[in-house]
Length: 400
Image (cartoon, rainbow, N blue to C red; front, side):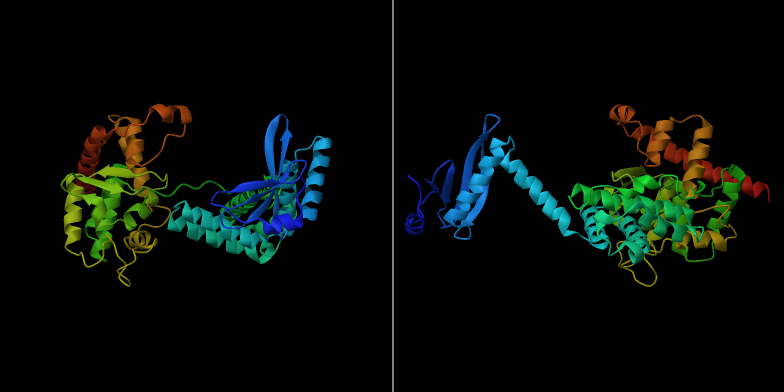
């Protein structure tokens, strides 16, 4: 029997949800809390499906029947009403438009929730500020390759070729996020491959010979600046970490009795926890550093604000004070020094050296099988390297 408005108004909720049927698959679902929801039951490709048609009384009986009949016509033409409804919603969503700046903020927030490093997010924010003056108010789905090229050319004009390359990648990532979330349909940055100057790959400067490295270590030993900065440089040489990993290190990460430093995953480039064995010399550096320990939990707090770590430039500036220019040595260069000289020694597995550097195997198949940390060998490697550095000091002194 077909429904009437009077019958619907007189229907009272029950303890459990129940249906009152109309005709041709249309019914009203009455929930215990009083809501009344229109549903259309149908079969498509042999499967029973449901289509939501709205709530009563916002959608009245007559309107619900009209929606049902529209769905039945789609079925007659071979279309699934539910799929067509979703397609229409996506199209409406796309037509609403949303600016590049709004999508960029969403994208950054997504990466923040994923636990990306604060430094990574700061760089991303900075790159976005380069794009926003031109692209910020653009509807993200209407951005074309030429629009992006205008932004890249303005950066390129200042000979910042590496920045232009990174900016293209960042804009592309933001637009692909818009595509994945239904706000755009194509990535215009794909058409710009080869359109901007490719930057020359520059390796960070490093001292790769024993005498040269020994001379630097002697200079660090007599460093006249902030004592904690000198100790930080010694630890960079001994442990070969990424400078940011050491700069932001906390005392709680060091297990001195077990002689291990545990770097949490949120601070590693590969987003995996990393542990490094501590040699006798590294332990001595940490014990000396403890003499300068204040109320901060950071190993190297800023002199201006003990809650924050020293700046990114502190360690490189210390090298400059000692007379080493940027073409000779950088804070990151200690990693290359360790890698080069440890590999040249020929007594350590390359995998152990790579694990010591916190690198992850690039080959997917090989990585699936090479999961070990080579810990015992790395413990020996760590002490060998610390002793080698001492011998390099002596070697450099003999040349004076």
